Image (tube, rainbow, N blue to C red; front, side):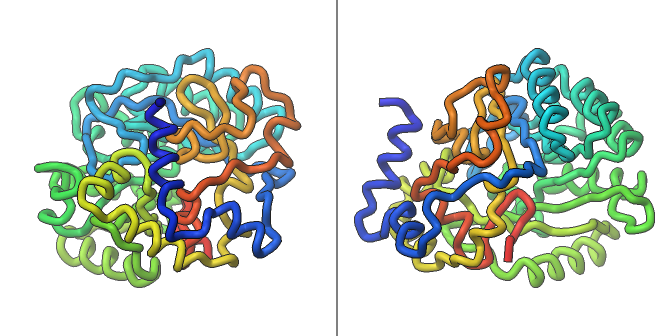
Length: 332
């Protein structure tokens, strides 16, 4: 059985929770559908990464070699132009490790698209990539960076020894270029994930704590903080199973289901493209192999992307628990 099917079976086997699809049927919200206007194309351009984070849902790492070829990037950009999708959200792995990364950013900017890059920061602390902060600023790229916590011990526990100090160094470099300064137009957003099998607290409170700690201890500023729940997918799912927390965590998510989050979930106005060009509803469905069309981006027409039914399973409780969770943080 494929790894993706095994993960779906793990989530479906928890008999103490109502299947997510049934939850939607109960409140008259099934099926969820993609809006007629897509705001964002998210492209996962590879699973190669310089880190091996404990919560990574795509199981990225130094041993992964999957990278999106330029041909797929070109096909995806054509779809963006055809559907007038204004934002390109580039993720990985560490997307900077794709040899066509700077081409993709430059081409999207040339086409008039707003570009978002999701970085782990530490990859920029490498001689090969030290030019990228300036490249980001020149192209007015929105930088979304992972920072597991604002203290070294807790951050390195999740992401590896030395990661926190490297991240602080790169945050300072981005600040020097104007990132995080509200008058510069250069946006620097920080992402927080809980360090264990629990839901994030109120995003506003976490942001205030991060802002105070980073400013007082390191003289670092940023634009916004996004609090993202950990998804029971990939490496975090393995952790939940090995620690005996899977059933308890899923019960916690399902009990915190909040119907008001459904209007803001990212899959409604986003299309996600895997490194091989397959089209999905979101990065998490990518990992689980749940595709809305099973089509390659080169084969897609408008009707394959907008107004479609969204594929759902029990991992979707992570997006709809409490204040909700999306690539842009809480949704309510």
